[in-house]
Image 1 (spheres, helix red, strand yellow):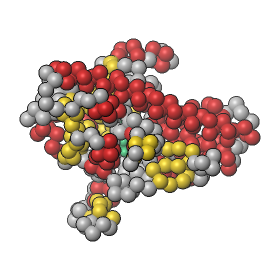
Image 2 (cartoon, rainbow, N blue to C red; image 1 turned 45 degrees about the vertical axis):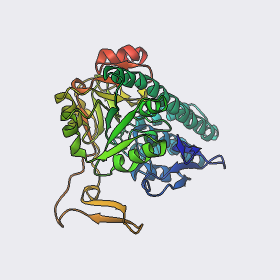
Image 3 (cartoon, rainbow, N blue to C red; image 1 turned 90 degrees about the vertical axis):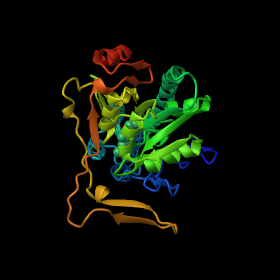
Length: 366
Ligand code: MRU
């Protein structure tokens, strides 16, 4: 997507041909800063500290992390250590494991001297594939939005609620849940997005609002608890979110608070769609979704909040009383029964085992 008229991806190979460039998302929305990753440890830190985040981008960064690792130590031991270190960075998004498995499968049969080149090529392919998949999700979702617009009589505004950031910043390009928003906006559908702020890290208020604003998409930031009220008042035509891990049954694990939004949507008869690239499907999970590891992050993300002061300084302040413990559960699972449809690069399906198997017969049979 474009930033100040320049087409950008969230991750790229530097002109020197070996270092990896990223947008430091911890600096958004107030500063647009790019940074270079030169080592596997820097890549792991970028994922862990959320300079990059969002399930597909975590996977892409890990893939380039393997390439950086292979420059330094392409031995079998180096390969295993890099994979283990990157895998341990964040537990919930399954794209991380998917990308590492894909790179390591390409590297394992290679002699050490050939591994760095193969890893760079595989990482680049994963990035290109993610951008293509997300654009296809945009086209599939556009048809869903067009249907909602027609059902509304083609009048007024199509009001869409989203949670967290599932836009191009969360992927290599286009985004998942926001790809159909961009496609619809560009096609002339009058879309307006309710943006959940998404405490504690404010990916909605900071990242989704920034993205939408740069693209000229009308939007309104709301506190996380406002969605139910808006739905009761008929001010939301549909919800759409991303997912960090989708089970083969169609349950979706996404940013904490997604489940509550799905419950409110169900109670109010508002369609609740989930957009996902196929690498987000964990085909090994066919039963109880409580097997999905739910990341628990630093309590300081809850007790403290960072923003820009009126005189332009970035500051962190504490909002809780000294000594009050805080819990920071980063994801929750929305059961498939609350999901109206899954929007994938191959098409739109019900959130059921049969729905997913119909779109991905080769994977579901594996
Ligand atoms: O903790 P984050 O910012 O990595 O969480 C991101 C999300 O929850 C997104 O909605 C998700 O990755 C799915 S779509 C890209």
